[in-house]
Length: 158
Image (cartoon, rainbow, N blue to C red):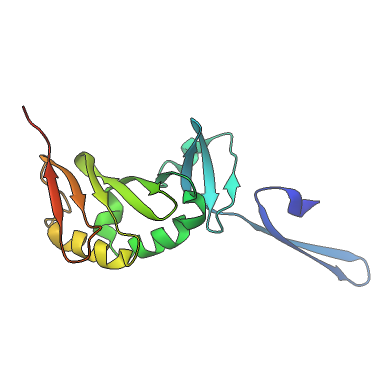
């Protein structure tokens, strides 16, 4: 019955003779906030969606959106954690077509990431950001989907 509780990852029960029972519970730890159908849910490393009465306790977690985002977020964050300057700027990540990610970073810049070799794209993004990890305010989109080029779209400031 304990394993049927969504926040419980696993349970180990041992009988200790003569008259003890030991129960060890492993809880699920949220790594992201999933926005789906105008509601917020927590997601753990296995992609399990967890309901919570209070998301505010987890406001430091990244927000993810998109079909299949919950199952791919662990690998995405593992790759992103190697680039703390970018990770610190992440506002939210959107899963596009169950195959790739777009991220929104500070000052509203959208970064379009490739399907393959996302780590290389993060490396490029890390190199083109300035020492504070900030981008120019007039940049709207940085497209890294094509391996050998960077496309930058500026905001229309009319």
